[in-house]
Length: 416
Image (tube, rainbow, N blue to C red):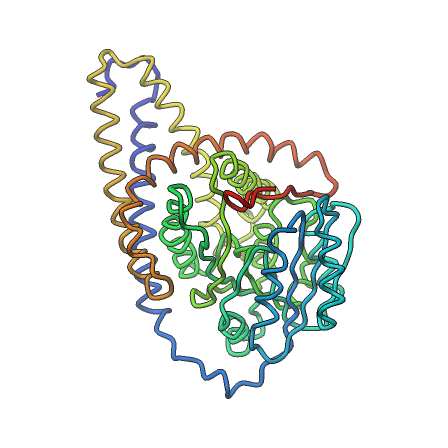
């Protein structure tokens, strides 16, 4: 098709742009099915027969006046027998500090740490970890609503999966489901993120825990120096530090946590650029893993991340080149139609399998029809996100200091 195109090597790059997502979709499907077959057949836990240890709930807050009271009410209502709740205000500009002060008076069982400067989520978690009395830290975002059984499922891993278990990541679920964008993200969390977590767990290493809900062994965090305060995504950074020190990370799909997601394109864009930048920062910082044989189990995760970054640039290059060099509109249309149909078809198969699996935790099967919007929009947005994040990730290596955060988009009517 590209014989008449003047861009050297375009055929090879175009083949890569097509085959990489096609093969990776098959890979995620296979990994998900293997996980379900070998790892998901676990006996039901009898919560009554376990001597449950103390959990320290850490909830960092920045401009969360609209959500923090609901989150605290949820934590107080959990029937987990031994818990302490620590709320950390990281220099909020809204009324969060006053709300936390009021809550601490109403509920003597909670503790509040007031930081008057915005120094980032990682720094807030540092403060909370130093104040925590529990050996196990359950870190939550300040818009999170935790399922009552989630703490049991998370902590059960630490009690029965060995002393080298450093973290257990939970299963984030989406609360706001009323718009096209929120329903597309619902499909994404079930089919893409869930499939990747399950597959990476089969490989033995994961790219990242879910910052919205994750439990840590405090001893493991101390061993790696806690969270990196200069990294924009503290959850990705600490995941890599733990695994390079041979602490294990597990995924617990039964540990459900309900959260709010952006419902505007600008909100999604800012969130995804931050995620992409954080992942690229970690890749730039930890490149030496490729030269250590004892880190070989994480090589495939590292390499896949860089290939996916290269794919975004390659997709843009091929698309622009095709627009410039195609002899006829028909030639361009045939390429776009064929590749789009094949990739969307494979993506929809992956989405269907993943939604079927996740339906036993959350009734998401009925949202499958919304999946038809997902592949094309996701690829376009993701390509722009990765390309936009790359120079920021490089610049951050020379910036230093605290990686501060901004108030996220929590959905229409809850933006701050």
